[in-house]
Length: 537
Ligand code: DMJ
Image (cartoon, rainbow, N blue to C red):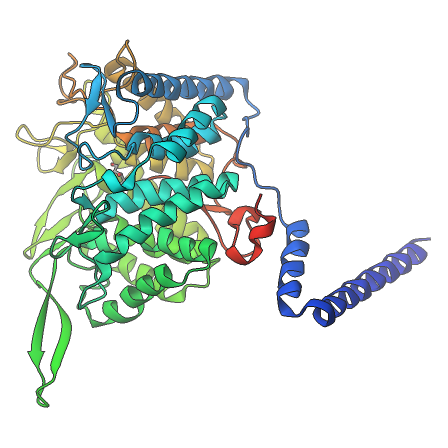
């Protein structure tokens, strides 16, 4: 009986293969190669795993209650913005007016709206999402953004936010708007080197700004590569290629780590030609924190996003992590906490920034993808240290920077930066580590952060405010609700209390502003390449 069944299955499989071959052959004869590539795309759609972009409830009712609570925080943050700052970039939740002192100033770019799109969608807040879409369609006016803006911020928040909304929904409005913004960024690349200028004026379509820091020019690849894939225009990818395949090879590094500042010098060669090379300030700053951070993040994530085909990015990433192990990892004396130092003008500084705490999640993510347990362990140890920077303060929220001295461990010095501006990096690492290990501590720590934010940062009339001093139990609000609180902090907390299938880590990479972009290849049917755009909607 078993033999007959095996034969029957074998025959069916043979007939199925024959039919597929005949089908492709017929398509090739009838319509040429385009039809075949479309039909292969269609066939691959059938074989792909389902992509969960909403829902994803955890099986445990207690976890579902926690996630509902995070969603109510998003509602509260959004309501405050809608009521007092709609269309402006950010909110002053206490003075109940728009916040115009950020990098976006009063440019009519609705940074909070664009940054929130995917969080609203993932949380299933569809009325709010529809209002945000409507604003983007009718009121987002790039011509009026006649101010100097940071190329980096425009890319990670606006382009990244719009592209993630496109990937999640297939709504072409978001792709068009992302491309409009990115086209206006291109003047930054009209430059003798491939390194773009750091500032752009979207309204005037001009750029300026001298030399950007490492994290600025090194945080473009995820958005620009995806933009080329979904528009069919190679111009964005070509800029990224020039940076990573040409320029970076001319740069001097320290065990795979790159200084945050660069200057270009022109030398005359013996043939009297200009020898245009990138010359580093050799005694500069090497850090995984501010000004360096997302350069390293994008090396790993570009490799992941490419479906693990971008070997150049992987090589640079692995060299960098070796440099981290060799030059930057330290252990504190009393409590054995693992931390990363910064090297500035050849001197070690035992200080970590809240920003640096993204590295815990990054090393764990890379370690899992590459089967390198040592990297996962470093990621977990750093995340634990970042947790200490939270629990050692009276507010249970972490300072902007924290030190390691004979007396201090993961604590802020009396003259240090004591503020907490609703940043995401610590909960970002909790989320990644939770997904990779399922160690319950990460959900516990995430919930501690939720309770602390609710206690100290929630403003009853709507919105959340940062704190000027995490060491003061009496709230000292800074009166700013940063757009990344809605884009990142609340999204990561929501996903921490969701099932692993919701925005699965093997189908998506998060850009540095937590906007999920699909992984290329056959793993994510929402990749939406330009050549298959007829299947997009
Ligand atoms: C965000 O804009 C991004 O996460 C960026 O990479 C660093 N700074 C903020 C959040 O802290």
